[in-house]
Amino acid sequence: MNRFCIIYLLMMSWAAAATPDALIRNDRVIAYQELIPAAATESGGEGLPNATVFLNDAVVSRTPDAGGPVNFTVKRGDVIFRGPNDGRITATGESEVRLVRIEFRGAESKVIWGRTGLAPNYELLIENGYVRVYNIRVAAGTSEPMHTHHDRVVVCLSGAQLRHVLPDGHTEDSSLKTGDCLWRLGQTHVGKNIGKTDLWVIAVEPK
Picture 1 (cartoon, helix red, strand yellow):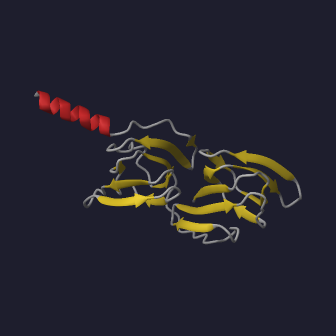
Picture 2 (cartoon, one colour):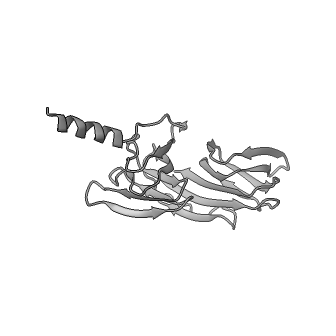
Picture 3 (cartoon, helix red, strand yellow):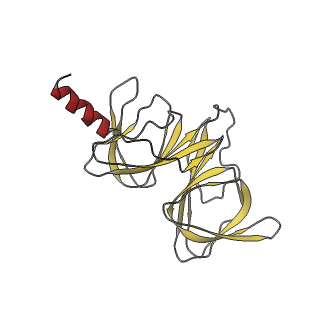
């Protein structure tokens, strides 16, 4: 093998990110958080269908198994769904790309939830046979009406102090920090933002 081939192979290996440790791993999902330097490509992970939440504004591309590169711009909080053959994300702009990739371990379902159970202020972003994804924003000092979540991954883009009022009147206080990526069990509650910062969360419910 000549020197040029060795250098090329080294460059290709540097350009592909190593798979990070999973933030969440259970029988439903595997969640990774990655920082992709400019011109590098995300890790392959488990190669499962996934929802990808972008944590910063960036210019990216992906190359499906069948077809050429797809270039697009993302904003902080944008979410895309990718099947196993839809290609990995490459940072094609001048800045790094930060993302959370939630991979789904279950089979595709025919169940459609729509807006069932969601609070009126939630924005439904994606729903298919693998996942329902929605955007939650609760301003400081405000509350939501009673609503219901399925088991889910929460990706927190803006943290807050919260109080949950359960159907029996019992209350539970909790907090989310900006950057958290956590597994939460399904629950019916009233959500109150009792802090001084606005809450912004992407909720990812596997089917």
